[in-house]
Length: 503
Image (cartoon, rainbow, N blue to C red):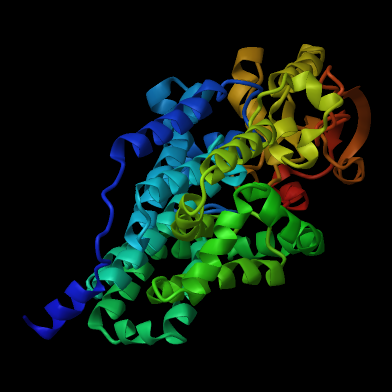
């Protein structure tokens, strides 16, 4: 036997359990069906409306994210008749994929059949995953690419075959077309390899090939950003205004978002991988997972940014958890009861299970912001249309519609045609690049726009309506003011710069 073959043979865990494929498949399918069953409740979240609009303007990049998510939105809309449920098929499939990849990692780490089922159920019931995979945002492909990267690195450490670096590089490169967040995981993995004896795997030409491949796949967005003056930096700067709030809520969120009953599993997975002899070969990944979590806290990132690492930590935690459950009769039953109770609570927060009106008295949107941000968009568009069509015909033909944020603009872009509205404009993110309004539009129905800005750019500004969702739910659009602004002072070619808001 050659040296390389001997290393690979000895690297394989002895007596690796077979995969309970039927059980894992049932959990994955159940997760998919649950997501799909509630996908039509409430409505689009504001980011989905934005990505639908962006999908009509396909490009290699956008102000606030790379190209992949708008492309998915465009394909989903085209294939499913532009329906809400159709848009959410891909995220629902994403949750099923997280379940399968988490179970696969647990098997590679040495979990038996019970442990693999535990890992699969942990992924399927994790509130962070369930909530994120309910809607099509950049988090969907981001979590999937993080999980796939961790799975591929696990394979690399088991086989000691440096050719796995090529697949890892391809995965990381594709991930940059969804969200640049993958850079933090890749950097943390680099540290994990450097500080352990796995550093020998870095001494391979395949690492260089992987880096070149990843950079090549990242080039389209980089070129687009450079050509447009690097607007992403302005977005990052705006996000930093929330840094301290994010830090205050960060650590409680790590426990609440994953689930109270699931927290001991991922914590034990981190400890087991760092300290247990069986798990020590995977220390580079454990170090990377811990570092990614801490790094986002230090940087003031949103609590869900490192969420993809929990796929590996659930998988690792399933190994000691399985042994603990089997050590004493009754533990499995108790654990199942605890996880079911925890899952029930998580689902109520992560998914729109309650009637939308219940959010008035049970403000779950304080925990899951998107719940309240997915209601009453058509009603708001109808209100805008009412004010637009109430204008005298002579004024209406010279009136455009502008909005303060991309959710409002996306809603009008999605529903406006059925209410007789023409193209909407906004200064928010990529909508600003799709402007300005036509030169003939010397008046505007302005939704949520700062009246001080309107008065600088128009000679007359009048409040014409205030939006209420009708069910008393507190969200960002409740109380939004709608103005009629007339008498544009300067041509839009000059005035449009004042409306730009990259955030």
